[in-house]
Image (cartoon, rainbow, N blue to C red; front, side):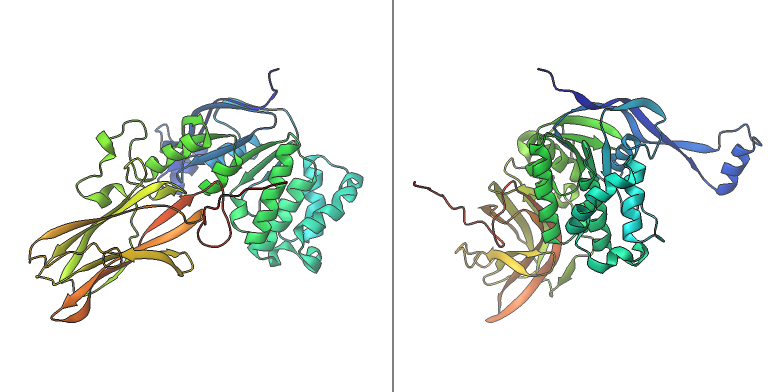
Length: 416
């Protein structure tokens, strides 16, 4: 039996007029100029896809790809320039912070305001109020104006309202990244409940691990156009290539990195470096399991870290290293050529060497910072030649996280 299509998007476009200066907008609105004084910018261009009842569909794409725009059109906040959207079912949407809330009203007043806007009577909201307040768990702040709320309190209340007014379609746009980790876990547990109840979820996020874990299907947007739709794994793979400005359709032979590796790789422009550079780290890159330059690595997959070092003078025994830190700055793991007993003996001035570290990614899904170092012995004394702190970010995509920083990869047997 064919499932019901609850959201149908056909040839959807949204165009904005961009003016060089405010006077151009004024002249056009008053009909004082026959010349076109604006340029057209398409936030969306000819996008089409359907969502079936009970699906959890993710939308991913780089910044400016049109993700939030399409959600605002679906929810009626924006009108399309061309095309149409058909929605069959009651929508509850959690968009950017502040959407649908009056900053001067208390949290409680905003609960009733939001419920009324969705179409509920006061009696229906009364019946759900205890569940809303329990899920939000913000205590007496419910009676204070929401302009006094922290971003975390705000999103707790907004999500509590969104999921407890019995929606048939839930739309969420990045907002969960604001809440604390325990609240996020509670929200994702609610996602699972919604899926089991056969409700539809449309989810926009930069958290690729959540996209991979919770979504049945993913739509990939780029610069306002729909590139493709398919399984989370396939679409995340294409998205990874977009992030490093590679063509997701036309791969290079063997996935070999460019001669200057960092040209096709996201590097921190504010990298902290120090050292006297008797030996200098002149290039580095991370390669995924398919040999492609990527800042995104799938948990459990093999990957490589490569660094190129140029020697400005002869070094006795240089030691090349890498370190992973979490975004709070705690060192998680790392190694070097000395630990791995891969010795580089007396490289001469003017020479270069390339060191490749190959391993399996067992860190939990999340964001990490990768640092590089070249140290060693010079005239019998230990010296730091060159270090690059937080040189690039690495996103680990995971469909299964365990406790702590890394996975023990346990094999579990249950006997009854």
